[in-house]
Length: 162
Length: 109
Image 1 (cartoon, each protein chain N blue to C red):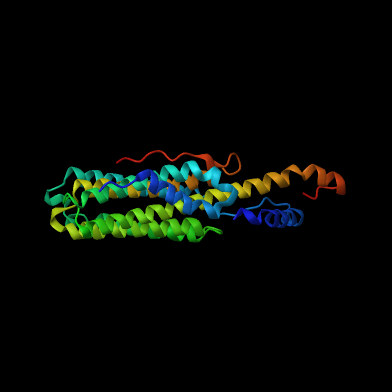
Image 2 (image 1 turned 60 degrees about the vertical axis):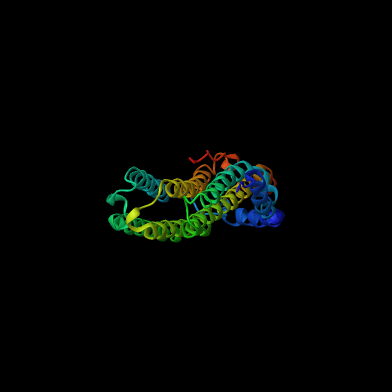
């Protein structure tokens, strides 16, 4: 990617000269998108904690929790549309697609377990994967937010729970 | 079954760093900590199958979530590289603004 740096610099210089602009290679920071990702994570954490505390009871069965999956599907579709509406947003759009895939996996796993509900180890491992995804998405959002100050490329991802 | 988590992380990083070029060093702390989280979770899943805590079908879905998590982490690494490149270009251009404007005699940049 950076092997084309001299060419990119030349193009950027032309851009500067013609338009007096700064170079934008990736989408602008969108606070609504950032907040929507945080909200989706919060709802997911609440849902998984509730499922874990109700494990083995009828309240943890898939049939008792379909509303969460319907709601989350709608929220992620809205997030996807929002991301798609931004120029140069292909990376974030792909991230939302991956997240949608994870929720489909979680739903299928829950369906598979049926009335029994998800087991503790299933919840722990699914939560870890989802937390990793949210963390990656929020790290990129933070870098977009801070791009004019300090690029967040040296940010350390905190350890997720296991 | 015990998986070599450090080995998995190095393998993942080895595959991810090549396309990053010069941005690889800057993205390494984030990428390695994320890959470590993912490798630990994969090891948990693998350990749960022989003990009967997780069956094969359940493991398939859980591993698929980890695949999505890995892909999302790689996308972030790519995005961080682009942000770094963008900052470098803008800093380079900003550094020559005075020089160029003085040379041409008006505010070109």
